Amino acid sequence: MTQYYFQGMYGLGDSIYQRPFLRHFPGAYVRTCWPELYRGLGIKCVRSGTHLRTQEKNELRTRYAYHPAPRGGVIKRIGYGPNDLASGGIIPAFRRQFGVSGPLLFDLPQFNDLHPRVPVDKPVAIIRPATLRTEWASASRNPDPDYLVRAQQLRQHFFVVSVADTVPGVEWVVGEEPEADLKLHHGEMTLTQLCSLYAHAACVVSPVGFSVPMTIAYNTPLFVVAGGRGGHNAPEIITDPAMDLSRVRWALPDNYCRCTRADHDCDRRISNFDTLFSEWLHEIVL
Image (cartoon, rainbow, N blue to C red):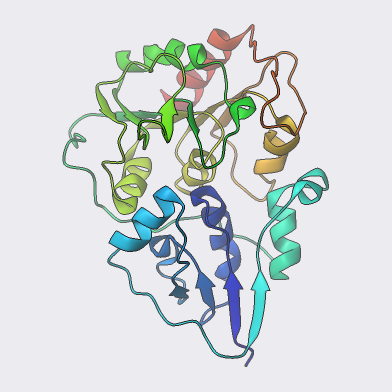
C-alpha cells in the first residue's frame, strides 16, 4: 500500500479546502498547522515548524497529536499559483495535485466548544471586519469597510460577534469597525472555539478569506462582501459547483476588478449593496 506524505498549505482557508481531498487517503500523513481540521479522517499530522503568526500560535497550543514525518513513501506538495487560479480555481488545482476525480464532501468536525462569552440562549451572527496584515499584505482584496458597517441591521435580529486576530503593527482592522455585541479581535478563541462559533451561528457576513470555506463546510448562511483582486478571489475561483452554495450570496462591486495585484486601487463601489444584503437576510437567513 502506497504511503503518502502531503506537504500541505499553511493558510487556514487553504487547509479547510484540503480536507475533502485528504478524506480519500486514510492513513496518509499531512504537514499542517491545523491538525484539528482533519479529525475523523484517519490522517496523521506532521508539524510544519512555521513561524507565520497565527499558524505558529495554533501549532504550539493545540492538544491534537502530531507524528514524526514518514520515512520513504510518496511526497506530494500541495499548493496553487496564479496559473492554477486562472485555469479553474482552487478546487480543480487540488483535484490535479491530489489526483482525486471523485465526489468531494465539504465538511468540518463538530467540536461543541463555544467561547464562554458567546451566548447559547440567543441567535448569533458573525461579522468579520476587513483587516490587513504585514505577513501577507493584500489591500486590494478587501472591500470598502463601510459596507461591513452598513450590515448593522444584523443587530436587530441577532447577537453579533465580530471576529479577528489583530496585533498592533502586525495585523489591524481597516477603517471603522462594524457594530457588534461582542468583539473578539485579538485572537481570543482557539481554533475549536472558532469552528464551534461558525457551526453555531445563524449567519456570517465576511470579506473573502477563511470564512468562505469554513461557512460552506458548516452549511451556515454566508454573505460575502467582495473588494478587488478578482483574478484570485472571484466566486468561481474560491468556490466550486461541488459545494452546496444555496445559502451563499455575494455583493460584488459594480465594476468588479479582475486584477491579480495586491496593491491595486480597485473600484469597490457596490451601488445595490443594501438591497442585496436585505434580500439575503430576509430570504435566506430569516
